[in-house]
Length: 271
Image (cartoon, rainbow, N blue to C red; front, side, top):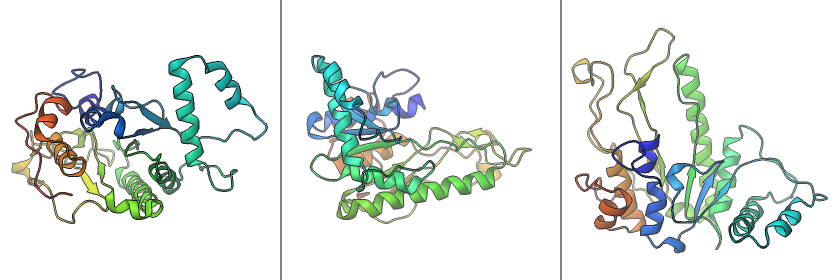
């Protein structure tokens, strides 16, 4: 997880995340980053300021927590700004009737809420959302079906509420580890090596597989147990950042993914 989010060659080689560095490389203050959930994941930590929002209960109209906190932090340059940014984010995502809560496990509702935070003049340009529960060591078939249904609902909610903005949106679905190619004794799979990545969104051109599919043939497995990796995931990230955000190769190789010059952006015309 650390390597996936820091964009480096190994553990703890970068103290910030590659997506935050991409915001800085693309102009810093001109792009707004947003983390869904708490705390902010490594991928969005760094020099570029980002907002965060986590689904939760609403404060009753009679409560004065927000105003009391504003009074408390008014002289604090860091906490005051962060509180103001958080209250503004909460206002953007508040439901129309002012009293509706996002239900637990309402993944499509989460997608719709994220879409609200991405639209309008104050909307976020780059958003990171984490979906867990994919570590399926046992009873995998039912769990994966549930997780994939949730992923589909999340993207559907995002697409429905983004409206015309969907045509300018790219979605990357990535994971930090793969699964073994064979089932274990509990109808699940264990941690593997090669994995997969999905690209979606109105800004993404329709197409087939990216890279070389190694197949699951016995003689093509990595160490006789895993799907063989054939592509550095950073090359896909680079392709999206270049084609969708306009970052040049020098910034990608030296600033966003330091020391990765050997990994060229994947394909032309992803976006």
